[in-house]
Length: 586
Image (cartoon, rainbow, N blue to C red; front, side):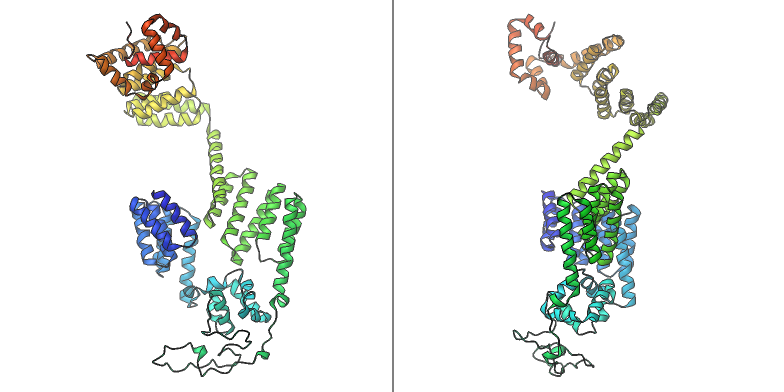
């Protein structure tokens, strides 16, 4: 339930429905109050609502539950950043970086340092949120689509001023001295910054909007009604007539829009060539699109895709690197940057450079988490781990480690022996001796479940390794599971065709039988059946219709049981029933 609520909360967070996300994470926390990830997620949602104090409380709780998780310090740093506690935020991020060199932590730390420097300079762009608005790569397009701001774009100087703000948003506050920026802010914020509405079809500019200086003087503050914005004051100068302003169609006069259309046409031609597997032609069109309009990094990511399909992985990486660098300067959508980084990872994976591929997959996921990149990361990690495992195999070094383990075992250093035998297993994973020896050391440490797992692994590696069955019987004997112990030693006898371990097997068989007899002394048939049926395996055998038929036949004709014992599967089941005491033998 908690995980389901967490997933729903994550979806709400991605949709920027922070209230819903907070509610869902809170419900999940009520069910699982020790889940530090839930507190981290709720902290992020509260920060999204700018509830930085509450976000800090959740971040602190996340760290309290798991102080070794670096992301908790990222949440704390973000909350402190929102409160303008820059030095504390820096300390939080730096603590997290000591635990993990995370790109997210490094990015957050740099943002705090930049914000602190910005405040010290007094530019205030971060405080007003202007930097984010003016840094929008689609700024010009949005303004061209708005009737109130489209007319301003006929002035090349004003367009260049907007371009400058895109490149350096920290200059945004100073730019507000230009009255045209009031219209720009209104368009970007979706509100009427002039505080009034004009009649439909009017070409007049709002009161207070003129080229002359000085700025209009606001009216004295009345007691009632509430004060009006200075721009609509009765003392504001008369606006210029409509003929003073050139009202032009931005579609015709905006050269940028025309250039962008030309680039989009080239992109379309490239996409068509790509689908037709004309990859050389596609690459030419995508490159031309970027050359015409170097403002959209999808041209570069598409170019990288064409190179990738051609097997030109170095060119693909070069195009992706350029897309990332240009995307940073253009403040492109983080999803596009993530795609470029993911494609770089794909190219390195194809080149066989898995460590670098993993590095770029992680960078991509830091920008934007997608299932396909995550799956590729996991696959690359598995492939790398398997390659490392195979590279580590060395039978000679395995023999040395095993001998070291034997020496430590004889000295009574069983923990040291386990470590040495583990090294032997890594060096020679298909040699059953390492598992069997480690099982013996685990037995001495009374770590019987681990010892049993090792005997099973030794048998899995080599089903003919007699010593593994003998060791398994000894482990089960120590666990007082005498029925399973006698089954294991019987299996050892079956495998020991050359009778090399006959004496050891017979001695263990006798020990098991004696203990099993003592355990069941005075037990009635009903008690024997009840005890045996508590074993799921015995219950399954007794419920098998074929075995029921065989047992019924054996009651009337005991000799028939010998014929059925010729079938290995039936023989195995019958031996289990004998060992459990259900079938009596004389």
